Amino acid sequence: MTDYSLYSDAEHAVNDPATTAKDLAEIAEKHPALWEQVAGHPAAYRGLLEWLAEVGDDDVLAVIAARSPSGIHAHQKQAPDIGTPEAPEHRTSTAADESPMRLSSLVNLEGIGNQVRKWKGSRVAWIVSGGTLVLIIALIVTLVVWQASRGSDDQTQQVISQVPREQTPTDDQDPCAGGLLPEGVDERVCGGAPGGAISLPSHNWYGQMFEMPSHNVGCYTYFGGVSCEIASKTWKTPTSFIDKCTNTETGQRTGCDEKIVNLDDTGSLSIVAHDGTAPWAAAKKEKSKIVILQYGQTATFSFVACLSEFEGVTCWHTTTHHGFKMSKSTFKHW
Image (cartoon, rainbow, N blue to C red; front, side, top):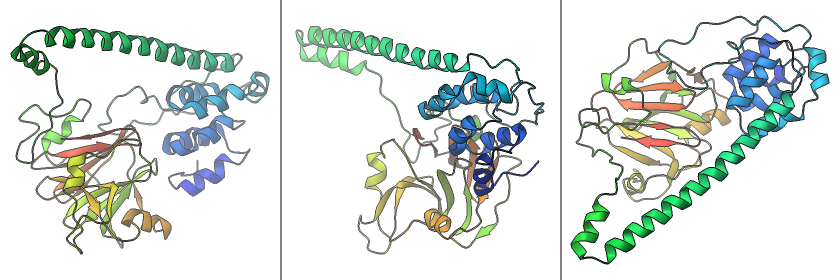
């Protein structure tokens, strides 16, 4: 079976009608950006489609729903035996851990379009019920605040002080010792440098560099720290990060890029200022060879370690334990 670690090879294969079901499963596991094409491929089997429907977005679901049941069945009278590869070491268990390579192949594919439509309908129902719950909570909070306003200023302050607030450790606090590690962050960040981390070769763009399998995040050594650059994000950059940004050439807050998060040698977090194209984007533009840090693998940059997961990349200072976790839709820092 061909190695599809390179995105260009995978993209060429997924557009080839002769590509096998085994190859499609490997492509789907390594390249989420190609899920729509995999879902529309004639060799996509039921187990693979069910997995894509579970982890894919609305565009992927639309491709699956649009498939003709008879057309799918015609290509899948005999379900392929795709095997079961070993899971990556230390991989965090999530709902998406059951990769297409692990799903059992089923022969009867009739009605998969209806199943996808049911899943989409359940999403709508969840959103509606969730919106109702939010309105009820908002009404309760309004009544509590109104009732408190009828009393003294001390009573009002007491009600407000009871509202929980998210705590972020300061630069001189250990997030592991203070119980300030955000929920969902791998506990290995509290253990220093992880065992089994891969060694990254030196890159012509700012030393060591790697890229996530999603091709949406790249990390590298940068001005005495480690920076992770994200191509597309929906989260808002923390104001505290922006306030720390200073252009090393001008000494002013110019050229600050909110898509680059830097972790320096003290464990302090900020965004990075630069002139022109950012390092990872420049390396990709020149089609330089960049190491892909596969899901479940860890890499070290001197005092910083990074973990690649399906949910995003996590990087932390191995001494102070400060760090961050980022993906397209989520950003956490501590």
